[in-house]
Image 1 (cartoon, helix red, strand yellow):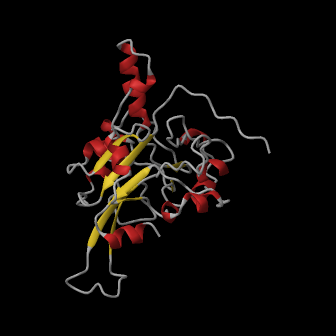
Image 2: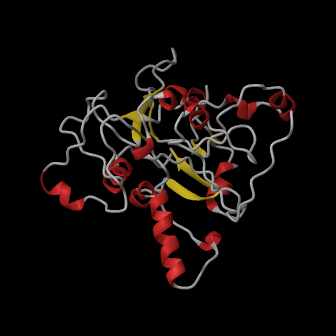
Image 3: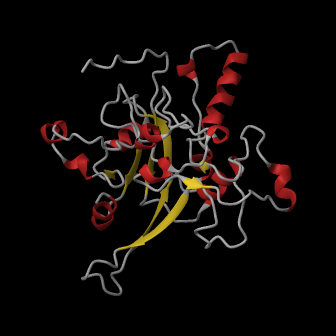
Length: 272
């Protein structure tokens, strides 16, 4: 089989995120900021899991499955979970599980590693939702409703996803486009000079969320990804040696969201 040629691009950045769970208090501010930025409706009863649609969910987990974890030793942690921006085995030819199954190219991976989602192109087949290993994609079962004055605060830079389509986090890529336009207005044409911050990171009151360029070894997110406390969700392949990885025929997700925790039980549970 002929080797696939690497795509030429001017983009040198590869966006990623690190979330320090030791700093996360589970306040949910990241979730609120995300929903507001991306025009997601707020539901009267947020506990209706099957009805609500969110890009970012805050999961509460405990070590109660540990037989030795009895009161007062039961521990709790919160995990903000969104699209993990998978890349697949080969960074030169990224193949996220969701992208390869979409029949209408409603989702794709950009030169910066961000997995996009075009609501208006989606036909609602939900193949991508079934293939996502993180359950990060959600289906709009209901017509979005924005109550009261919330309609007046809708973000004009983000189209409202219609009923019958798949939605997900895109690392607020529209903010990058906004910052790019600002740079162009200043005469700066180098797209690698454009930096931005997703709404969830900007809204985090404890500084638990860090966003940046994983290709830049000097960036904070790149350093945190190599921290001894770092792990990735459902990614035990990280603990394999390179020889074992090379024999893995099936593509593994290779996400660009890293979590950090000093609690061993949490790292083991999340990386299963």
